[in-house]
Length: 273
Image 1 (cartoon, helix red, strand yellow):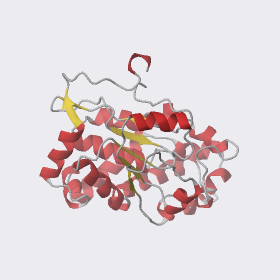
Image 2 (cartoon, one colour):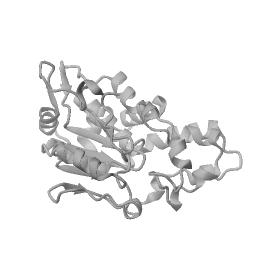
Image 3 (cartoon, rainbow, N blue to C red):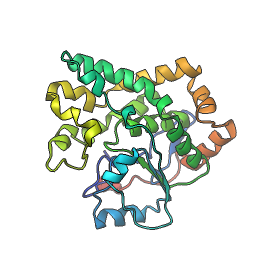
């Protein structure tokens, strides 16, 4: 939990630093952050994030989501990366409208949804990786809950840096400990998730059926990487062919984001985390 940033009105805001890689290095602290929606940050939160010297904000949400919950980022020198795309990429309304939709079918639907994520969000992930290779860090990337689009992006980044599969999965599942999305969904008025019409079907489901849709389950991520290998031969093939990341660019990205384990950098919050 040392990587969780204790913001007053943040959602699932975490530092990706500290993970060790297979070549004996580790991800730098205070360099790469993942998050849920950041539209309700307080002045104190803004001040905290400003102290990190963040240079870029990669917003993986749709235009509708951004308009509904605008992120007012302090400072004009922060690069904003945003995309417009069909919000139907994000929901399972069609499957959930089946009268027989159950927790089991919801789980299966999530696995199939994750199989599509690396391909559906190729433009967004390509743009994110390009900034990392260019050294535009510290950088924060996020979506609404900071679970699916963000979780997939974080997993791809960590895996490409050489972090073990076990740690990639642990980081993905940490969402389950950091935020109670069922509580956020039920909060009034709509909590900080503020689902729009495109996601309103979630409220019509029972908590038991909804649970697989709100959970970060390891098998979801494993299904996504399995599809990456099927479609591209390997993660390296996906990075090269889909994200247009050359060996040189990957080396530069690792140089910007990794450090020797002898470095004295420490997690955010230090001993109080």
